[in-house]
Length: 276
Image (cartoon, rainbow, N blue to C red):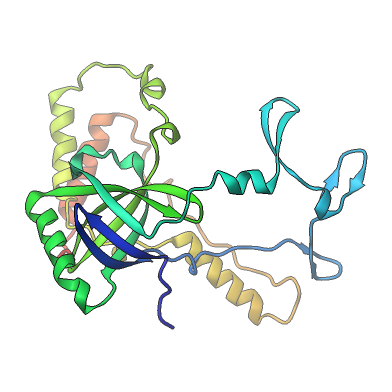
């Protein structure tokens, strides 16, 4: 089944308009989600809309409210909310260009692939891609989708473009308040050298396929095992935790770093895959 476009429209750079299609770069199908089940009957639990002291209420009696203080709400009709929604424009105008390193990773939200809509759009699309690549810049704009306006960044990605939605400034917390109590003292040179040696030994090109979600894999195995069992409550074997008790507990930081470096040296260097 062909992927469905998240958005179709035009990227505009000054007087140049490029017809494009945007597709989600991530998928959530591999995530495991659960439903709540009534064990005696085996049926799925549903939820009623209830008001404390009144009980269940009809759907047409429900209105949206924004809490301005404890127990105090501003009530809004659906028509009022619809009236302030941003008109869904089919044009993404590139209004600013910045160095990629200027955008803090905290602002990045979700990635999307951008492709030309047809062969006629390819030439202008390629010009934009290569211009961004040569300038080493990221393009910024605001994308109107489903009544909301999203801040987005666009950069080259292989033969295409990658669009990433960004959080607005008021959606990001300042981190310094969490770090106020951390000591500003510099570490000892010997400790720093050992840590750097360990980092160098474990450095390699990034390859996401080398990392697996072990929790999800264990859950899938558990579900498969119980699905094959005839009984309602299958007996599942315990999975032993790695032996963390072997050897003495290393408390000293220097000794721990030295041990890590020596342990890493003893391992045979694995063949590193070329980065994509």
